[in-house]
Image (tube, rainbow, N blue to C red):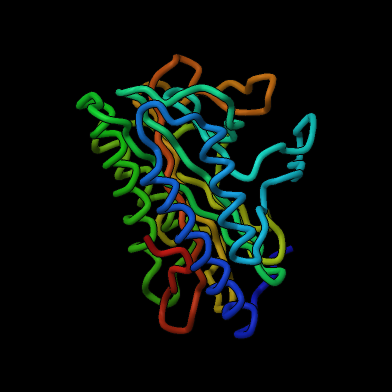
Length: 254
């Protein structure tokens, strides 16, 4: 069931989103060669505590997962697409790191992600990161006008990926968010213009393109994270948005 948000809920989501973006950008700056993934998780927890907020991911058990998630954020490296658990692995030059983060503040949940290159990265990695970022922006642009439909998002994401020679990964999607971390509807990264549910005022979505430099096929690891099946690089960007009478409002703008 789709849960529409009232104006007071959107106001709460703005506060949650502001905290999320502040922490996410701090983690992006911190992500340098030699930094451990657990260092990023520790920093996120400290900043959440200072803000009076909490992680939407910590102890969350999504459908199909074997156990609750043990960290405040997801840190996924290279061919690992999403849901990577922070470990003592040190970031190395050439890595591409996906940081995915959710914040609960006064009961309202926002979700966002970005991909950052560590030091000098390959041209392929640079292009993949830029294209994934552009795919997100294309998806947002496609629904700025009132009367848009959910298929407009997926069409824009997939079109951006394919025209740049990359693949939308299979089986991983965006979603509704706000009262819970994962709500209806599913937001596919493929689709057709003008198809799917009408985007109504009060709908809050986490839109998140996940692209691969190679195959679209994925595999799930024992820790519940997902990898590209062929070992190719992957990238991920995500923003939480609210549908308004005049289009959309980005609640996690960065």
